[in-house]
Image (cartoon, rainbow, N blue to C red):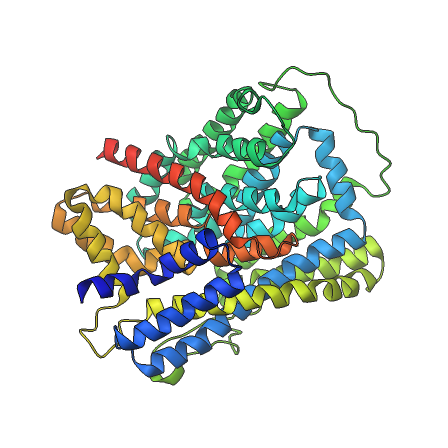
Length: 513
């Protein structure tokens, strides 16, 4: 019976891996099958309350709508900028910094994406940076992969420190300090990993791929060191809430100067790109400036409280199960993105046509994405709320965590980031992962006599790593660049850098311990 319980608790992990990665099914098919499996086995084996099953269906659909709203905002903004031709001007601006796309993927995906993560979170960065990379001529599949992998290091402090403030519910400064200490030796390699991925999968480099990577090692390591050192300092001197906001801005400015001066870059004949620009760079970027500004303003305590009070779309205690789902529409990044799209339509296009056309263009993408997101989030909700059952009242999350702790024992610092990664892989949120497993991590650490703060730091880092491969982030990143049925292929590639980052975190944590 124990083996059967282990199998059922692993369905949210094995389902996507088997159906999407191994059998190459689309997310619509693969996640629907995974959802059916967890419903059937949840009822038969876990004896989950029937109200929880029906409630999870309602909550799953509701959560899918909240994500689709963000996705709608992101797609609408990109399509509006295409219609006003601002995206072409942004493209020319990037090419003025460097024509080498290895530089540009660091600037767009890692640094600009990091800033969006620090201001917003909620999977927003990949939906914004993916289309920007497509605009500079990067293949949509490559853009989706790069956007997901790059959005990793900043996630530990994403959305103004939410993974720590909400996820851990603690003010202990040792945890964020330890996160940045570990990242000094682990997260520092993410820019190099991003460039390596681009070289291997873009198709731009037919031969001498290792040479194309090696010649970029100095540049990527300097960017990585600058980022992790800045994060290290900001966390200690200013506060972890600002780590993923200040660090990307500072390093982005330095990286632009380095690229323009060709510092630590391969010595090559400078390519000149002659373009006729009908729009100023500031005007083209103005919608994104609006996005960042509004996200930062809406995350301040006073404004946040006002926006969160508009909660008529929330679901509370569905079917008396205690399950809730929030949709504070004014606080959602989707609203910010829609406002920026409307602004772009009027400011850049001088009428409402660009925005109206972008809505029509977004329809088919949203329908396809919803068919994958709804079963995914129903499955996740059942998994998280499986403690409401006719058995011993132990949920799948706790059961799985305790089995892992028994497997790793005194080497729990190997298991703790893995558990964090599993949490965000399933739920799609570093915050939810830490909320779900934080208490278990604390109990295990105390029982084994481990440094609780170090264990929780690895939990948060693991949750950030799982963000690369979680299904609904993959669906969103693929949808916004126009991909369909590529979710399994995306995960098949993103899981490699996820494992590399995870191993680096484990090694550094063990050394610190």
